[in-house]
Every structure is written in C-alpha cells, then in structure tokens.
Image: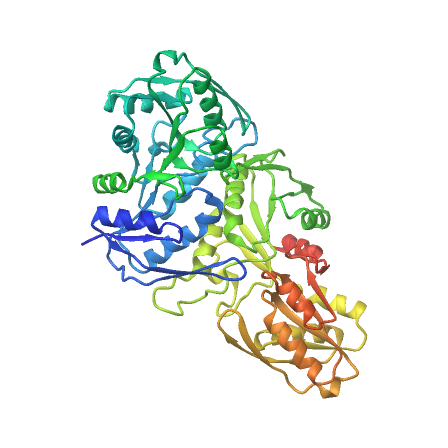
Length: 293
Length: 293
C-alpha cells in the first residue's frame, strides 16, 4: 500500500514533490491556530494500518515541535502503522557536548524527544561534528541523506570550468566529494569562529584559478558572515564574484540582504528549508533514502 | 534545604514573589537565542540533590514548551532531585474529547508530555470541563490551586456593595464560592458559543441590583467577546459599568482595546500570566499549594 505523506503548513511544495517521488498518497491535516496560540489538528485521511511519512523541516524548531508531536500522537491514536519523520533540516545538533559547566547537551535531549514520538528519522546532511552518526543520540532507525550528488549535478549543468571552495575545514570532506564527482578542482579555507556572529576566513592561494568560475559551498547559510568574508577573500585574489551554494537555507534576519550586498554573483540553495533562494530540488534523493531504510 | 526556583525569561516578577513566599532560593539560568531560533541554556546555580521548582506559565505554549523541556533535562542531568513544574496557566485543556472524527485529544497528549519530563505539576484554576481532575490525564502528582480567595479578598477590599456576575454556566460554581466568602449576591448569565469568536450572552434580571457595583468574573480573558457582551447586557438593565475580574490574562490580539472600548469600568487580572491588567497577586496561594503537595 502507498505511504501516506503528511505535513504541516509551510511544507506544501516539498511535500508534493516528495509524495510524487515516493509514489505516495497525500495525507490531509486540517490545522487551525486558536487566538491563544494553541493548535487544533484534525487528520482528514483514513490512516489505520497505513505507513505514514511526516514531513517537517525543523528550522526555528521551538515553535514547530509541539504541533509536530501532537500530530504524531493523533496519527498513532488513529491507528497509523509506522510513522517516520522526514526532517530535511534537523535542529539542535550543535550543542553536542557540555562546553561550560551547567550547560545541557541539548542535541541529546532533542534526539530523545524525537525518538520517543516517531518510529524513524530521515534527515539531510545533519551537522555531525563530535558525533559520528545520528545513531549515537537517536535511538530510532535514522538515516542521513546526502545532498552532495544534487549539488554536483547542478554545478555540472550550469557552471563551466568551476573551482569549488569550501569555507572551512569541516566542509573539506564533502566539497572534495562533490569535486570528485564532476572532476573539478577544489580548495578549502580555514575559519576561526569568535562567538555567534564573528568569523574570520583565511583563504588559500587561488591565483591559479583566475580563469575558473568560483563556486562557494556551505552546508548551512545562517548569518552568512562566513560566506561574506569568503566572497571578499576570493575577489581579492582577482577571481570573479563567486556563486554561493548552500544546502540549508536557514538565513538569520538580514542575512540574505547582507549576502547580496557582498558582491556574490548568485545564491542558490536546496529546498530542505523553503526559501526564495531554493534552486536545487532534493526531494528525489529524500525519497530514495526513505525507500532504503 | 530551601527549594531552588528556576524560570525562563518573562517570569521575573512572579518568580521573585513566589521565591519569597516559598522561602526559596532564586535559581539562575543563562539563556540565549541563536540566530536560527534555537535556545542555549546554562544553569548557573549548583543544583545537585536540590529540590527544584520550575516556574513557567504556558500561555502561547507552542514556542515555550521546548526550552522548558530542555531546561528540565538540563536540571536533571545536573543532579536536581525532585523537579516540579509550576504552571500558573496551563494550556491545551480545551480539546478534552474527540469532537470530530480525525481529531486528536490534545489535552491528553500534552499531559503525557509534561508528565514525562517533570515530577509534579502545580497550576491554578485549569479549564476542567469534561475531566474532573488533572489526575485523569496527568500521571504525575498534580494540584490545582484556586485563585477564588484572592479574588474575594480583592473585591472585599476595593468594592463596596458588590453584585458578582458570572458570564456563563461553567463559572457558576466558583462565582458562588467567591460570593459566599464575602456574603455578596451573585447572578450567572448563560452563554451560547458559535465558533471561536462568536458568543451570545443572555443576562438574568439584574434590576434589583441597580444600587450595587457589578463585578463580572471570568476565568480566562481571551478574545474578550463574552465579557464585552456581558458588559453591554449589564448596562442595558440600568446598572453602572461593571468592573471585570479575570484569573488568566490570555488576551488575544486586540482584545484589551476592544474590552476597554466596551465601556467596562476597569479590568483587573491575577498575575498567572504577566500583563498590564495584573492587579491581584496569587504568588502566596501558589506557594501554599506547593508546600502541601
């Protein structure tokens, strides 16, 4: 039987694409916000015994988590069989240790919460730093899909003679991977972080690539400060304005405007988070991962 | 040992009063909102082996619940002993049955969530309609404090010759209770609800009370529509403009302005939810209930 794909308001576009690639059936949820900020939910699709996929990207997770948990409980009460959460952007991955006394390890707490309510988790390129895999903190079957092949395909289709540039050491592994797929050269900058908003980017020698089209690739575009510094550092070496590719279009307030003012040629993101810069569709990759786990 | 009283931003005033009446010690939490909407938490008070009270009113619960659960987990990881949640306004009490097929019973789901994370729950005048007590849905020790005596005391101190008026049948039991405490007459209107925002109030004969000061009493002031109709119905019978007392100052957008335009003499609420209309302090009542359960 076809899986039923449910989602909450804001995920319409990606949900439609995912449903198509999954050969699934759209699930129907009626929601309503009461004047006091509570959420009303009614599932309008028969789901007894059905395989359920619940799509919800978790940027700005604080306001999204409770309706999501309540919908999960409602689906279970209505007899849904397996309920897997598809969370193209997964939140609370950064606080992966106690850096200061008194801090909680929120990534673990969040993982425990999600693991209590759902039967499986699919996400895309989660921020794995100290953890090697999601299974270190998620006790349910979990899978991390990779947007790398979609980014590689996009670059190959649209950019002649590219040089790929990673903004920090963490990005090396997968920028190298994308570069390998399309046989393009790549370089990786070093990033030093000073608090939430201050970063300094040290760019390697790019002068050999002055006839290339620079493509900056980052996993999460949040404040954009790293990319803005990287854009400047690339142009200082006599290369043209780079294109910026991002997987997760998180965009803090003002970030998009600041990035556009930085002289970047164009910003293109995947649709893990719905945003005006979305240009790379990852729904087929998500659907493939969902069939395999 | 004195209990440690923790709270999240927005509860400063009530937390200080509750801490005093409990003879407790203020707990210190450092919070920070990341640009992407996640919350950082650091507990700056030693809490190993300590009795902990966590104060958080749950109006607009969707955005508040996750930081609250994360703080609960952090306190537990840091070795706090018993962690009781003091939630002067308790959310998700209205959906107490499946009214339509496909609906979830969100009051049960919310209760299960809170019961998983905390060791006890104290609230004030929760919206108990089909449930007889919190223990029907909360699996942890729970207690519902009553603001009635505080309202009675306020009326006795400030209003000569009052007549108390309840806006609907549900309010009868405790409007009668307050009236009994101060030996004042009372009457109760009938309310018919049409959707979220439409109500019709049918007021009993009040002409015998034209020389009394009318005091309208409601448990939750949300849209204010019921009270606005009641204010008009009271004045139509030749009584002076009533004072409105509310326990929970939920106030939907625009509600306060509409209520003030209705000709009400004054709106006074308790501080279960911080609001400009707060005039009745319930912190001592909360502290007393907390010592007894």
